[in-house]
Amino acid sequence: MNHDHDTGPRPSGNALLPLGVFFLLYILAFIFTGDLSKMPVSVAFLTASAVAILSSRGRNIMQRIEIFCRGAANNTILLMVVIFILAGAFSGTARAMGAVDATVNMILYLLPSKVVVASIFTAACFISMSMGTSCGTIAALIPIAAGISVQTGLSLPMLVGVVVGGSMFGDNLSFISDTTIVATRTQHVEMKDKFRANFKLVTPVALAVLMIYIIRGFLDSHQMQTEINGIEWPKVLPYLTVLIMALCGINVITVLSTGIVLSGIIGLITNGFSVWEWCSAISSGIVTDMGELIIVSLMAGGMFEIIRFNGGINWLILKLTRNIHSPKQAEGAIAGLVAFTDLCTANNTIALIITGPLSKQVGEKFRLNPKRIASLIDTTSCFVQSFLPYGAQLLIAAGLASVNPVEIIPHLYYPFGLGLIILVSIIFNKSSDTKNKP
Image 1 (cartoon, rainbow, N blue to C red):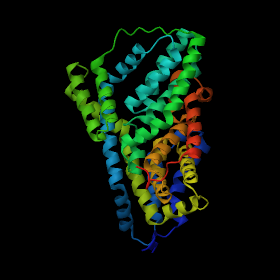
Image 2 (image 1 turned 90 degrees about the vertical axis):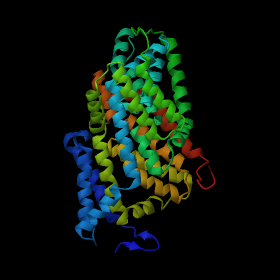
Image 3 (image 1 turned 180 degrees about the vertical axis):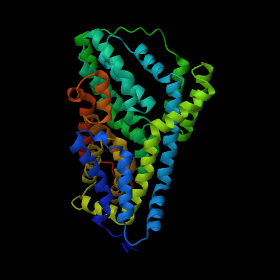
Image 4 (image 1 turned 60 degrees about the vertical axis):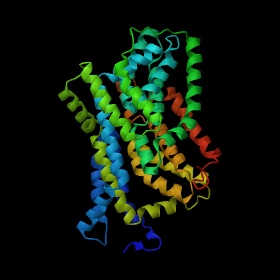
């Protein structure tokens, strides 16, 4: 038996074998191909889950599978899956009815054309926060940025860096972002509370970067020529509605459900699609956009339940916190764990799925405010993800702009500032005690 009735599962480093296998698969993929994306995350989790079940001792195979299923059916995991399904359905519907293009056009239409770089950064921030996806924002704006580069003579890698930075700002704050969903569910906090904590942390950085872009824009005096005649308000309405409802603190399931219905009705009225095309868009959003993430979440929940049952989580917390004697050190350890995992997986959502439960346990041990931890792990993952030349964001941006990912990195002003503010906030944070703080 691996359990102590007083202290729970007895710490055991051997229980972490599945996690080691998971990371090893990515390391091998990088060694043999030079590309981490060659290893599908679902295959990595499937292999690690199989190792977890097979290596667990003291139970027959059916009992091990039952433990795995218990973890996959955890309330936190299942609610996260429901939110993923609704977010995918909303994303697919909004994309099919033209909301993405309409939102991009609205931002470019409303913002001053004289301040080119600042306009693009602001557009990326707002669109990503509305859409809940940095990759989707990058895919929408990079072609526009490339066209502006041709028209104005501005550096293309610089404009791409502006888009990536703004996209990560919005993704980090969005209520429907994968990382926000995972961070809030694993830390058991409300999205509006995490948003407030995030907003206080990253807004000064975004404003400072925006001022740099504005000053640079006036010094360069480039002009952006747009041919957008107006705003398609009906098509923009779903994103605006979702954003406003989310900011008001309305339950995320209600928010997303409203977005799906509103997008569908507007799409039908404007002949954006038929009823059957709407159904196909919902299916595409769920299966194509969120399918693998849903499967991975279930497998991760099962795998970590086996690891927890066998004492792996307790062992890792014991080792991780052995030389930690203060909340600041605990926050630093949590941020480092998230950063390391993101470096290994090149996927900030997966990094949070892996480290979220562990971060919560460390947070509880050191009485850290869960709202603060949700903000910290999400922001850290976005910071690291921004600089990965093998990460999805830079790969998509580089591919669409036909530039090398490494050329983009020096122009990531906002992510650089994000890393600095994370470090400063850990060093000077004085509100970690969740028992004494609201």
